[in-house]
Image (cartoon, rainbow, N blue to C red; front, side, top):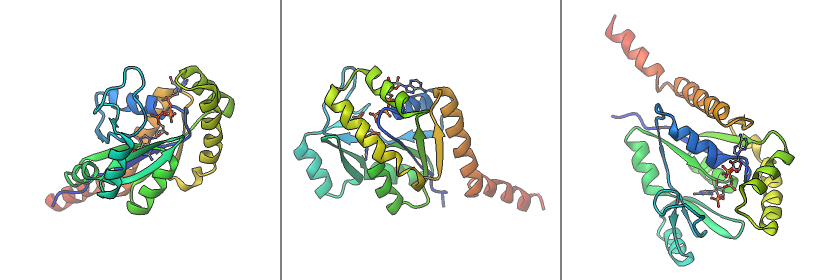
Length: 205
Ligand SMILES: Nc1ncnc2c1ncn2[C@@H]1O[C@H](COP(=O)(O)OP(=O)(O)OP(=O)(O)O)[C@@H](O)[C@H]1O
Ligand SMILES: Nc1nc2c(ncn2[C@@H]2O[C@H](COP(=O)(O)O)[C@@H](O)[C@H]2O)c(=O)[nH]1
């Protein structure tokens, strides 16, 4: 039987750079994960494409997905719903591929309960001032929403001890290197790779 893939969950406070780091992870030619595209009721930002950045849904459509058990997890975040489509995650993990989720902390908590052997990584900003600068610098939120996101960020950072690893996003490429190193180490730890060498010893006996 095929070895199941590893579920990698990247989370952290709003504006820390989760989306930026995730895109950098997937822009590496040697990226070996499958990205799970989330569903959301938020309106698309300029340049965002349905089915690429998110599956953009109405509130009614999203509620139907919840009722039909189509989501691995979901959360309401600063006035909108976000959720992870369940079938894609299951099918991809069962096919032996690693799945990468980039989600906020309430959703990550739900995933931890359902898939405890996932790999949970918390992305940290170098400081709260730097975090605010990044949210302001992105220019996508009103003053009120920036305030809400900073309030949410403080609550989110308090949950970092629930994660397996904390990665500082002081520099995007360094953060990607750290994440890749953690994933590789996890593969060894869980014997996904070690199994290969055990088989090698058996064959060469
Ligand atoms: N290491 C970094 N150094 C400086 N700026 C960064 C870094 N990483 C990300 N940024 C910038 O910070 C801003 C927020 O990044 P991004 O949108 O990726 O955050 P996020 O955590 O996905 O936010 P949200 O949770 O609100 O979706 C962007 O303008 C991005 O370019
Ligand atoms: N619980 C979930 N959170 C998700 C999911 N997809 C994205 N997110 C997180 O929501 C916030 C806001 O995102 P934005 O695109 O509006 O800036 C951010 O923290 C994302 O990581 C999901 O499926 N479930």
